[in-house]
Image 1 (cartoon, rainbow, N blue to C red):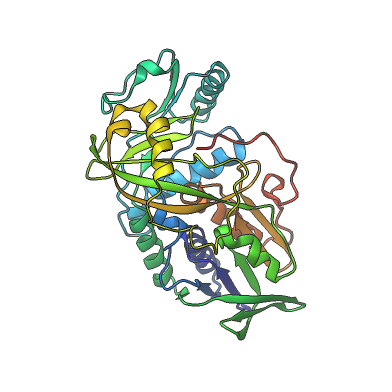
Image 2: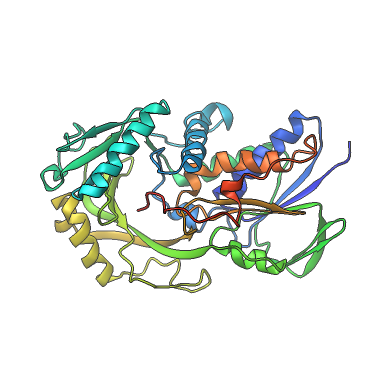
Length: 386
């Protein structure tokens, strides 16, 4: 059969997972596709993926996000079998807390939606304390949604797992490989890598916060905006089995590391703030006293541990945001864009990779473009975000 060369731009979790899914789909169909992954950094997953807190939830407002997240959680929950690697998955659950009447109604609807989709979810007003998290200030809220099957995992172990699986499937993983130009042709795409030109039949743009810039190399654009987020490790400990807890009114959240050390984070950015992914402050571990003050004020509402703790470590990463908080999986001729996960890349990467595989399946003469994932879709109300 005719061999297809596929070049994937971006070595984070989305690009790596897509590489594994495409390679296995090709092998199952008896094809010997050549797949190469191009990452401009010196190591894989070293930017936003490695910076993530790595929560895996299925509670969303939009059916598209729910579907992608359910596929993702199933994939990661079975990583030992699918990828032959453990990823440190813990079924700690997610706890959403609110003191706003409108959000309380939204959480009640989402609990019903989860239950209807076969995912356990419990809505309580007032909030019912979770046994593994007695330190949370439940009395400061009027309603809660607890999703007990949601999970936490290690982003570093996930990167190692999918990278190893991709290598085992024959994918060529190239680091220090900067893509500097994409020129669509009648035969595919001319790809300039560190100035040298190569041919690809298909290019998959999985460049995260750089996805719009990569699209621009081919004369395209994507409605994606980078948004800087910060995660901190505090000098406080909780049960390693405690849930990820989020104050959906402020966006503050806390979760335990596997050793029980407390993570805390949230947006707390100035309205209208814009940052380039190439800005040195986009990815930094430099202290930010103003952020710490906001973290203590907002996260301290969840638990006094945050208000009283000292920040031991802190770092930033970028979310690739879309207005609706639904990702883009969109094919135009020989280029497929898979980005705009709005901070949900690890959660949704396996489901999105399956969509990419369908779009590239040569056995389908006209794979249907999912309208909800198109770059040209109508903007809907933003999904739940923190």
